[in-house]
Length: 253
Image (cartoon, rainbow, N blue to C red; front, top):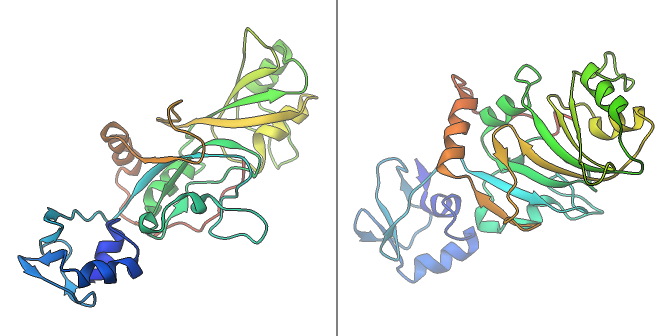
């Protein structure tokens, strides 16, 4: 059971405060009856809720692909910088958190959800989910860097990194594509630094089967496609626990 106003808010109709106004206007029906009391308890799986004559579909979990711009942090709140959630309308926020984190100055794909099982499946070191980045370096990359990445690099952790892939752009050797399968703190930047170079610009292009399209502007987000939702189900597999994992349990990239 759930309060009607929370149900409508979680379904993305409007914020809780705006829903009060919507209810007063008689725009919501529950099982055919106009309802103006947001405190009404409904069965979200059985009761039929209509808003402006259209059925409201309730989803327990939501999934967004977000194009993170530089200059915002992956946190619920921050005293110095805007957060990624400043880009998400209030009515779309449903106890959301980011799947992993990107640095303040890193751009690119960031998955946002309230599904802890998916987050765990994508971030667990046991899953080896690949993440690909575009990096601009302060000096040209060379075949020696490719070999170092393929072998695994000592970046000061208890063990070297797992083998990673570095592909050099044929048109500009200072532009490289890096694919890693783990999430050590600042891993990409530290691996590049260990090769005697520095990262000037970093953008995540993909995470597993989820990719950033050119059509998604910086600061914009979208719901996952049906094909991507099939990947969600595959990643979650037999996971039954759906409590959100602790935010920030895996390092920045």
